[in-house]
Image 1 (cartoon, rainbow over the protein chains, first blue to last red):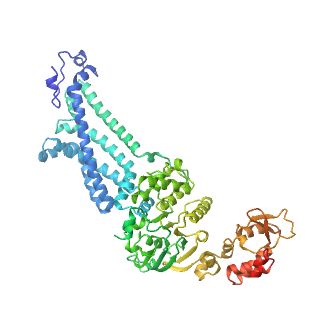
Image 2: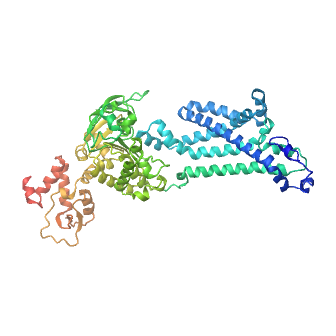
Image 3: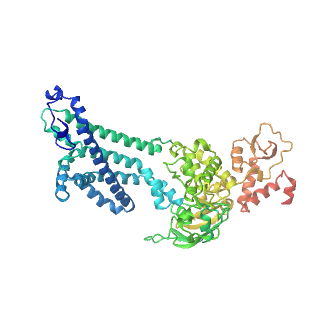
Amino acid sequence: MTAPLAAAGGPVIPNFSAHSSGCAVHNHLFCFGWVRENWGPVLWPALRQHVVLTAIAVSIGFVIALGLALLAHRHRWAERPTLLVTTFLYTIPSLALFELLVAPVGENIFAAEIALVSYTLLILFRNTLTGLRSVPPDVLEAAEGMGMSRRQTLARVELPLALPSIVAGLRIAVVTIIALATIVYTIYDRGLGVPIHDALGEGPFKTELIVAGGMAILLALLADGLLVAVQRALTPWSRIRERPG
Amino acid sequence: MNRYDTAQAEGPSSYPQAAELELRHVSKRYPGQREPAIGDLSFTVAAGEVCVLVGPSGSGKTTAMRLINRMVPLSGGDILLGGRSVLDREPRELRREIGYVIQQVGLFPHQTVAENIATVPRLLGWPKERTRARVGELLSLIGLDASEMGQRYPAQLSGGQRQRVGVARALAADPPLMLMDEPFGAIDPINRTNLQDEFLALQAKVRKTVVFVTHDIDEAIKMGDRIAILREGGVLAQYDTPKEILAHPADDFVAEFVGADRGIKRLSLTTLGELHLLAPDGTPLEGLRRLPDHASVKDALSVLLTAHGEPLAVEDAHGTVTGLLTLSHLERLISDEADGEEAEAALVASATSATPTDPGAGRAT
């Protein structure tokens, strides 16, 4: 039977006997029967884990990057060291970083999230800072001249105007992390990487690889589309074409 | 608690009317610069008057303006608004009581026109209803349809409309003082003239004390009740009415700054109705070029120069011809004035010695 073998996260060995169709036995390119049988025990849990891994990484990364960007926006000196560190983190080969974190942190969600978060920082920091700095000087002068405090200017003027740039950063970060999270399985057996990895060891049977890989791609597209929709809803002004004169 | 603290919740009600503005020995020095940006500037703007700060670049006119709402900190001297030193005020609270208009307008692109205008009322914590009513009132004051234009974003407006909204936003909390930094400088000439005229009409209604910065002497002459001409280093070269400055420039700098054509510029400040014109008795009026009596003498000169020696007929609001003007008559008025007589008196007095249309007024002089 399939069920005990396909416990979420556990190694998945396709069951070619029993009631499996001849499709899997004959290694056809794609077997709907296999997908139907394994959706509940394998694919759906992996997808959920993948979403959770990504959401945690991007949320924590966004909070850290926003804080750093606000610091660098207020104090120019903070930009360089932040860029240096985040760029360095971004350049570490991902497999190496995952392995490096195992020794101090262990094979757990913390190691996975630390690694994923570190890949969001550069993108989110840069885009947020760019957005904050793109606010026209006359707008800031008007805000000051009308008696807004720095905090009011930030909350009512700078952050709203930086929103398109911030969301652009979030879109890149989310898509990147959805892709990167497929190798989290190397240290922590969660996410769509697990069925993808299993499929790689299954020789000619490709259905699992195609389905899990396809799910990662669809998830990325869906998340990206969702962020576009959110941005459009939040910034109706940003799509208006400037009138001349 | 002083009266400003208690007044804050209701907005700048501590100044129900326009307030007098006084600069007392104001100076501004920037660290590392030997020469001060503003030397020792003193002048008073009466409540409800428009004071234009004008001067070449480097004369510190914008700096002087920004000292008033403390966007630039004072180095010395004092500034009093409604008799009270701005230095005693918390800067942000002070700025909410002073309308502020800049050349690039600085409307918030992510907010609608109505939200933009509501900026200061929101900062002051006005109730929603009061803010909404005020926004509607201001939109109609600047001639924009509240229901339609109020919901637009700045990017959907023309340059002239944006600048009008900028003025409305500055007026929102009914401030006793308006600071305007080259407000019409980025607008094309035709629209600029319209905006200037509109602002003068608006000012006639709202009667704010206004400090208006420009580098354009013609704009200064047109907009100002008084003009403060600044020279390099923020030194006040002359502070007077436009007519006085054109008639009696204080020195060569002012004379050069107002231009060699100051005689003609002065003509633009006098309307035909102020002159004693030639009586129209008996002269056939058919075919004569006509101008209303509120037209300027400069306009009349322009018409006369192309009138082939024909006189010009001046008519009142009802279309009745009240007098005639010829080129030679006008020339006599101007040359008498150039003899150094008191400006207006010269124009009118010499007209009297010619053929006055109003014998009573002529004899009285």
